[in-house]
Image 1: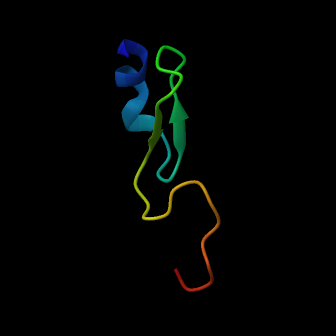
Image 2 (image 1 turned 30 degrees about the horizontal axis):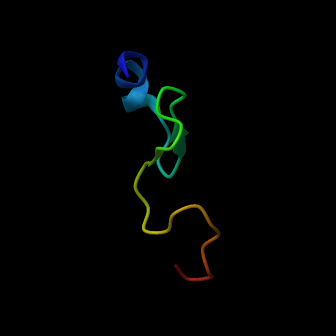
Image 3 (image 1 turned 45 degrees about the vertical axis):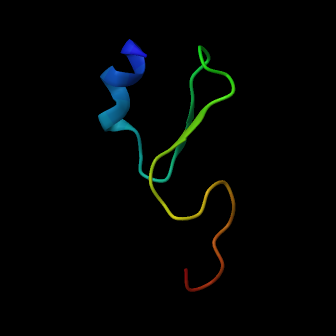
Length: 42
């Protein structure tokens, strides 16, 4: 988590982040749609 905290401000918006120490947890940086394509106009 220290490494994540160090670089969190540099992670691109609408990016998914997986941390090996917490393999069942995925962090999604904003966006109203999680892991999938947007429909036209969204």
